[in-house]
Image 1 (cartoon, one colour):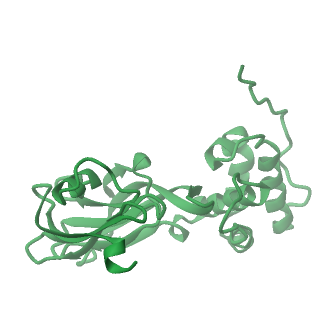
Image 2 (cartoon, helix red, strand yellow; image 1 turned 30 degrees about the horizontal axis):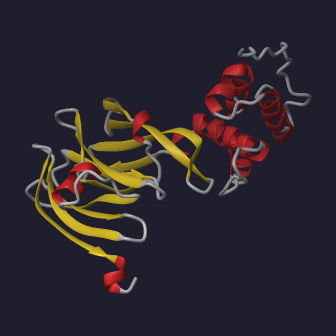
Length: 276
């Protein structure tokens, strides 16, 4: 049976509020004390929201020390997140609540009127081999003149890590980016800010079928957004492999209005045939 985690009421007042580093350490200690077997920042914060609110209330003066703690985040973990990882992630999340621009990915449209923002979901996502990564859970598009949110798109299920190739179409209607895991695969999305719709690039199933390889999926793939054309279409590239055997490399043109690709070309070969 599940055991409910019960925490006793704690005094969140630091011993000396005039000592900023002591106050930060005090609040982080309170959060860590309530963590138990939890490791996601949101779950830990939910155990002691008052301590987290007090930490954030220290404001921008706390950022240098919080950033120093956050920078101690290891690049890798050995099977599970240890106290150093979790404390660093909590420090980063506090910094993020004080100033979100520190960790959000932002890209201005060509005329500067709209800002595309990838919002942080967690600092404790990961990839194969124990790499610790930031994962983004929302795309937000804002009016730069007023700050109003024009459109928000939830991305919790997209596994948005390792963002790259972030780019607006020349007319500022579409925004594209590539994301994904090095160990498994990378996908691309195109966001239509005018119509408030999002379209994925063709998934790997369609790619391998077009390449004449049936239904067997590769062990690794990368479907990348590359360069916008003046007509509003987007050049894409694909790479996939079946371990040490078959490899495919190709290109195509993606029409975001129709959600379709054209001009698909793919070179499929066996590694042994090329001496790899």
